[in-house]
Amino acid sequence: EAGLGSYQIVAKIGDEEYSNDIKVEEYRKPEYSVSVNTDRTDYINGDTITATIRANYFFGGAVTGSPVHWTLYSNDYYYYWSGGDASTLLSTGFDFGSVAAQRYFGYGREVSSGDATLNANGELAVKLPANISNEERSQVYSIEATVTDEANQPQSGIAATLIHRGSFYIGMKPTNYVADKGKPARFDVQTVDTSGKPAGKIAVSYTVNLVNWNCYQTKDDKGRNIWKCDEVKTEIQR
Image (cartoon, rainbow, N blue to C red; front, side):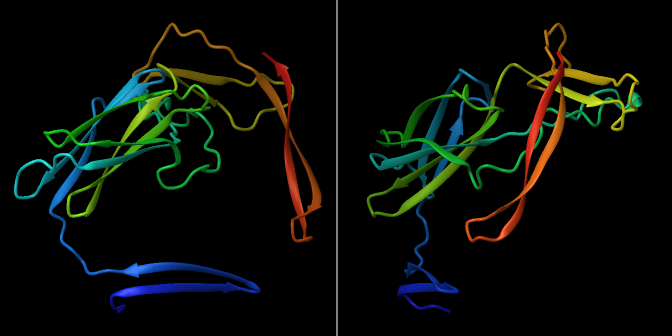
């Protein structure tokens, strides 16, 4: 068990050395809590989010006039539809967007941040644009806020909300995962709204691609032989 004071952790891997300094301080019981709440549970691209940050003492009363630092994070959201008619097996197997390798860990990448002050009620309202036009899929926004009181004691709170890429989702699945050469192949398409209810009268377009993998041997940054494969798509129908 480490005593109070400053420490340095050193890790060595071959000829490489990494270090990090840490400080162990005496535990101090928090005197107040911080919460973050959004005005809605989910939004659509282009909406405005109102996030309210509140700080209250456990013995009652608001933490007033204290500085607040907030940070907005964004991470990919993968939609899963649990609806459909189970008797026709339409409730399973629909792909609403392939799950690629996770780009960001934790809360995701930082989108924006800011500093402000709590008002007389111990609150701060922050308006944030739900702008994900440059993203390929829907996003989960996480808003983290840290308040520092007069005793220089910081406390944090966080809330997450969903930003839909649009007002509906498109799912697709093949009736068979192996097709016979020269025979028709069928795909089922399902459109649903953001609450998961089937949505009709939505115009869709499609493209059928032939996918091949071009694999070759190369060297990594340490000169070792490795295999790499590039995806090659050829449009055959639209």
